[in-house]
Length: 110
Image (cartoon, rainbow, N blue to C red; front, side):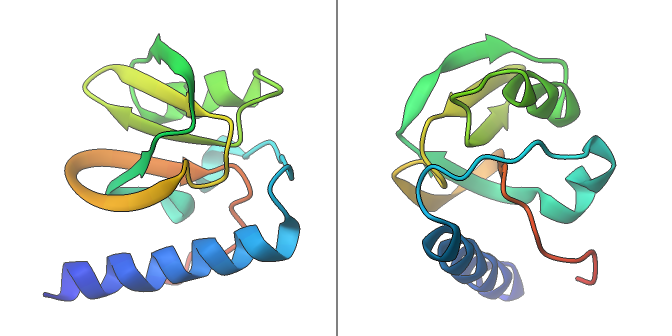
């Protein structure tokens, strides 16, 4: 399906960015860019620091921005799972999840 193709393309971009910048690169995400960076129906599996309650994805990203160890997040149903690894250990399709890598660099053109 087109959703799966988009997921695979975005995952490829994430992996290439991750490899180019290295495993410990951390950036603070401007919350206005969240719509450009969020991956819907993607779970950054494993690599958890832990979870904190969050109102929405924006709140989750703000909490990650405040945590020096946080490199990516996965949000679902009020739970913000902060990750100490770019993309967790392995990104995968999981309906309802929203994930974001803190090194979001791509433009808002999709």
